[in-house]
Every structure is written in structure tokens, then in C-alpha cells.
Amino acid sequence: MFQDYGPIDQNNPTPRYIQLANRIRDLIESGSWKAGDALPSERTIVGATGLSRVTVRKGLELLVNEGLLCQRHGSGTYVSSEEDRIEQSLGTLTGFSEDMHSLGHVPSARWIEKTIDNPSTEETMVLGLSPGEKVARLHRLRLADGEPLAIEMAVVPASILPDIDDMQDSLYQTLAAQGALPEKALQRMHACRLPAFEAELLKCEEGEPALHIERLSRLHSGRVIEFTRSYYRGDRYDFIAELTLPGARPKTMQGKR
Image 1 (cartoon, rainbow, N blue to C red):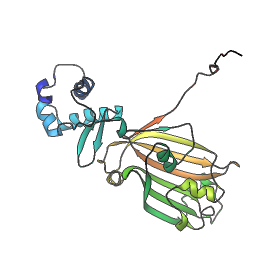
Image 2: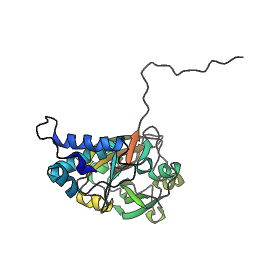
Image 3: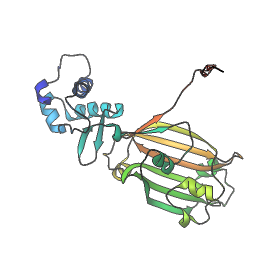
């Protein structure tokens, strides 16, 4: 079916990767390609369109970022379905396990590193540590229903987690048991490309789009209790924020008394 459209118009001023993305988008929106359908291989698309493999990959990446396509390591590219993407609110302070449970998924973790270590200069400053204090370094691959979705690299003061062997899948449940559950956090995120090591863990290709998130969580006293850096798969996550206009009043229901 893709071959029926012929080569990309080389005289069209629109960038060729966008022409390709528009063609694929039309096939999806028209219903010719349905949710879950596998796309032709890159080689097939290159042959049908006359584009370079680099241009084809750029066009596919554009649609992955839009959420229309998802890429599965070692399997190929597919039309996304509702189940392929996970929505996470930016308005509440929760951990990965709590988020997945609330969405009906089964969370789990694979440990990459779990050690008591000397902090870096940055970690000492961010966590407000005294000289000689150590940190618990918690580096995990996070999964939902057995599928790798994120990599978390958390650092907390070792005084909060004296026995890291007691640490299970949920960091926040462990902190709560220690009476050190954070009440607020500052979170920063930006788009990035997956480095080779992280891509292999997430079963993605090196250089695929991802979200890099940095979180600083604080206790009620204001003390920073958690410093976490994470990579989230760009083809599986949507972060949602509800916005209101400054000064706008919420609508109220007028009822009879």
C-alpha cells in the first residue's frame, strides 16, 4: 500500500522528512493503517520513496514524538494505540510504583546499583550534607507489566536508609516507613536522546527520543530528601498538566434550594 503513493516529490519545498511524515499520518488518519499495525521496514520505505535512510528515520521520529507511532526494539515501528502510551500528571508528587498502580499496571524494578557511597560534590550541595556523610545510591530499571519504561538514579542521605537491603521496589513506601516521606518536589524535564547504555536497558535504539527528568524532593521542614535523575521512554509517556488562567474563578453549580 505504501508503494502506491510513489516517490516523494523532490521539487516540493516542504522538507522531505515532513512530506514522509504527512504521508504516513494520512494513512493512519484515513484508517488505512490501524492501531497496532506494523509499518513497512525502513528499507521498504527507502525503496518506495527514494529517500535516504537518515531522512526516513527523521520522519518516523517526528511521528513517534507526536505519539502516532511507537518503536519496539528488535521488532519495528507500529501505529500507536491508546495502550501504548501512559499519561502521568505533573500535579501530584508520587513515585513510579504508585503511578503504575493507579493506572492499572503492575510495577516492578530491576536493580542496577544499590550501595552506600561517598557523595559527589553536587550531591553534597543539593542534599545539604555535612562533611563525612554518605548517601544511598539507588539505580533501577523500572518496568510496568514486565516492559521497561524508565531508568531511575536516586540518591538519598544514608542516614535515612541505614539498611538499604530493606529497600524494596517503592522508594516512597520505604521513605514513609522511615517517617521521611517528602511533601513537595521541584521537577525539571527536557527532551534528550538515549545514550547507548540506557537505550540497551530500555530495549530501544541508541539516540531514540526520551525525557530526562530531575527531581528534588523535600520534607515538610524544607530539607532535601531525594535527588533523582531519570530517563523515560519518549514513545510511551505523556506528561499532563492542567492549567488555569490567573484570576479565573472556578465555575459553580447553581441549584435550587
